[in-house]
Image (cartoon, rainbow, N blue to C red; front, top):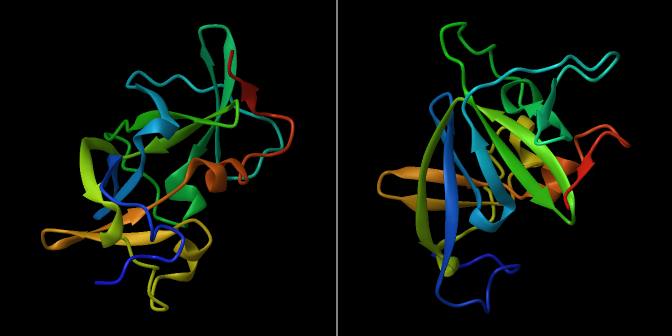
Length: 160
């Protein structure tokens, strides 16, 4: 399998924080994930886009959180499924990413990442930079920088 042009030339492995959304497996570079929050209490953000789940207070910092299900047009999360919040850091900005379930941190060979196929659902194309086979599954790779673009301007918290 040919590596992606943006990742070719990098050898070895990268470490990825995996999470589930429905039946799909996603991953972010582990260095983009600052923490995981299991107990969720969101404050609504008036007039925010539908994919903004709300704000959380993280040790005095207000972090705007995105519901990845809404951003990707998935059905609403079942009421008995609380989900988890991944707090992401990108260039000094913090955002929360509400996902269904947090998985493991895994090492994936950088050369195994491929560009997403043209058949990838349109709702994924703007967010998924690549795919990587893991066993019989495909991991959909995301980047915090891309997700930060979906947060309304002026609502991101700066990390200390």
